Length: 234
Image (tube, rainbow, N blue to C red; front, side, top):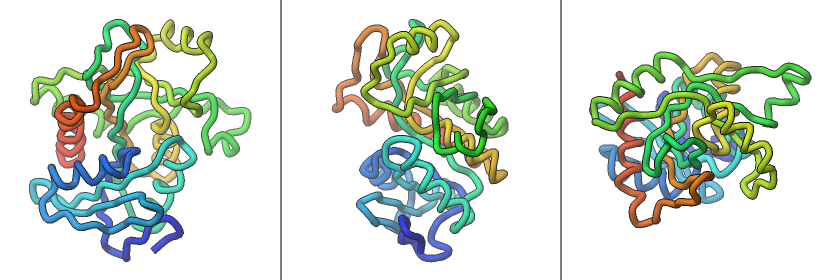
């Protein structure tokens, strides 16, 4: 048991999927895992452990933003022995070719600032996904006839962004989408020698203003969860 995770030793699997929303963790556990058991509800940040195709897996909410994500990822790695962490979440599209409901597999994650910035100081470290996971996720998506976009994303440290000039440069440089957690995941994975990946669903679009209706999200997010699970155990 840690400050933020109430699971007992052995209750969390080595493979952990991490949605930001704790209720998405609950939904994913109920719909994709067998024999799912609630192992954490500290501060309402729900976590579950069950099996997927005979493989033990946990799904733990991380909250919004890199500081919150960093707390849970650090404790999962340091105190519970997690070896594979996959973020499953929503993002905003930043390219014309990226459409609502599309899946993005993030190769790299650019950011202005993260909890790891104090470690790197003046160094512009380039955090990236684990290659074995990324390759497996692309294969899993294609097998489901869900061709993914693969490339760089932007992890913002603010939700209500007031930097249209920065967004313009992200789009100009080919960034596929924006979210708020993946860069810190990739930093921590590199630091601790574990596998990290972000598989994202485009829920809204910065260029067109489109947004995915809440009632339509479940099926599309289901594709993302299955891709992450299949990639983890490829």
